[in-house]
Structure formats: structure tokens, C-alpha cells
Image 1 (cartoon, rainbow, N blue to C red):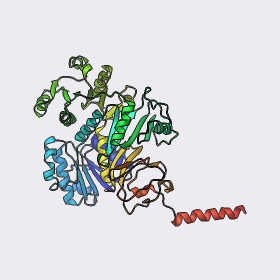
Image 2: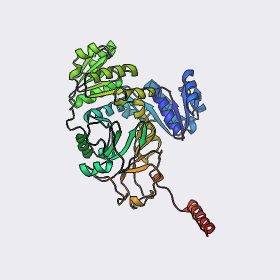
Image 3: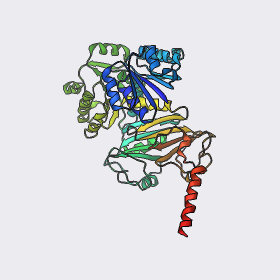
Length: 466
């Protein structure tokens, strides 16, 4: 697929990296020479230095034949105008990053007029994910599938958890809750485990099942979870605005600490139910004066990874139960684990998941990546064209490192065994280490030339052995 990305900041770079890894033909446009040089050195893409406003620049980039144009500059107006121009020049689909809350509210009215097929709002998507994490303390990631009927929860195994040291088959027999531990990350490696796999402290474990069942299993891991009643947010960013608005609806008390006085005034006007404090969120004296020890949830959302790490460490030292840290730079990953910062939010990764789902087409309903691009949890809807329909799973010749995690049929959520089969209309979740664009791709084809060749070789071997 030919994809043009306009604007190479953190989100644009992450998109270019992920999409080029999947084998797409990527062209990037940016007006800054330093950015062009970095992308040219780091990624397998075609960089073009120029003004995306310019029709000639878009034509030089091949906009007329582009399958997808994604605009992620720092200006909403530029993104919308570029998408409009790209669509007029012949681009098949367009997506624009729209961050301003005012535009986001009114966009539904003008989306078609602008030729927009998709709206990207990393800040709002990040706020949604943080709100879900606060609803289930202990989880480090939560993703809904099958329109909310299936939930995936990721958590870090602690020494005192009852499942530590147990094999998966023993966990299933003892607790008898219909959930699947479908993936485990250990020492930055992704494992798709079998029944003999043994859970260890420090593992990051992905539980999948019906939403109620996953919640029941989470109570086994943390019998007395802390209910989040009040939250402190450091950094008055757009994420903070969207998050505070969600938390107010959940009847959670919110206080936001922001350095910039003008930003404080704007937030105070937009969020009348929240307490806005003008100050430095890395100042331990200020944090303790605002009763940090009594806070249930602490979220650091400044534009600086370093400041977010510092303020989060202060919150952990104050024994705040739920601490969430926003990160932008990949090299900071190595720091968060040793520092005890388990819950890390990366806006560019969240929005990349949305874009990848959109790029792969209508066959993919939902997509969630694990460990960057080491693995994926993907939701498909089974159709008449899929070769596995009606066949018991035990008889399917699946590609390596693919696990069928759940089958959703109407209101029933099934953790499948080898005797189960997939029917037309089922929503099916798979976990895989491969990039899968279509559901039928997970079944290895038999018969045809390849099968005949295997049979011929086998026959030749029999003749030689006589």
C-alpha cells in the first residue's frame, strides 16, 4: 500500500516506523531538514522536504496514486487543509490529527466536507485508556474487544500473588474462571504459552475473557483493590483536559498541577469541578502540601519524560497505589521497570494501533500490539470466504505462533478448545507474533502444487529406501 505521512513528530515517526516495517511503501513530507535527515538515516522510507500546503509537493510525493494520506503536523488547520487537498488530487483515503477540543466537538458536522476518512486524536485516546486503567487498579493495560463483550487485561505478577509459580493448567483447574492467559512477556520477550507454562514474579501477563470474568479474576490477584476516589494530575496538557472531563463524569475528584499560569486559567474555566494549582509537579514540597499521601491515583502528563519520571517516583515513594506515567521516548523504556514505574502510557503507540487497524482494512475490527511490534491481539469477523468455517480447531493447520483466544457468538463468549469450531459471523480474537491482514491468512493452505511437491519427494524417498 502507498502511504504518505505529512509531519514527522513523535506520532508521525512512530507511524512511519511501524508501517514501513509491515512492508508498505511510505513517503514522508516535512519542511525541516533535520527531520528529513534523521528519517532518511533511520527508516526505509522516501523523504521529501517541502511544504505540504503546496499542490506540487503533494504531487511529487505521488498523492494522485496514494492509498492513504495521514497528516500529523502540530497544527489542526494544516492537517485538515492537507487532507482536503490530498482528496481533491486523488488520494483514496485520508486521516488527520485533530487535537483541539473545539474542533473535535464540531468535526462530525464537517468531516465529509473535508474528505476525512479518519480522525486521529492521540490525547483523547490516551485519556480514554487512562480512565479504563483507573477503573481497574492493578492493570497496566486494558483493551476492549467485540464491542466491549471481551476484555484484555495486562498486569505485572507480584511475589505475593496466588498464581505466582503455578502452571497455567493448574490455574484453570483451581480457579475455574473462564479466562485465558494468552500471552506473557518476560525479559522483553513475547511468549505464547501452553498449559505447562509456569508463571513467575515479574511476568507481564495478558488475560482475555468475558468482561465480568476478567474482573472476577482481577479480584483474585488483588483481593482488596483500592477504589479510586481522588486523582492528582501533573501537567495541564490536552490529555489532562480530556482525562479530567472523563473523571468528573465518573465522580472522581481531580486536582491538576500546571506550571504555566495562563494554562491554569484556561483549565479552571473549562473544568469548573476540578481544582487547578499553579506550580511545579516535580517539587516534592508542593506535592506533599497538596496531600500526596492521601491520593488514590497519580498521573504525570507533562511534555517532558524526565519530569514525568521524577514526579512519578515521588508519588511511588509516598505509597500512592496507582501511578501512571506518560512517556514519549523509546529509550526511557529501560528506566521505567527498575524504577518501579509499571504503568506507562505512550500516546504515539495508542494512535499507531488505531492507524494500523484502519490501514489493514475492514477485515480487522480491533488491533492491539504487544511489546511494540513483537506481537498482536487482533479481532476478526468470520465470513463465508474464510477456510476454517465449521472445522474443529484441532484439525486446522494454523500458522506458527498463532493462538485463537476467544470466539464471540451473539452474546456468548467462548474460550475455545480443540473441539470448538468457528461459524460465519463469529467475532474471533487471535494472538500472534505475525502481521496478519486477513483472518484466512492464519490457516496454512494444503493441496495444490506445494502438496504435490511434498508427495513427490515422499515417494522419491520411498523409492530410494527400497
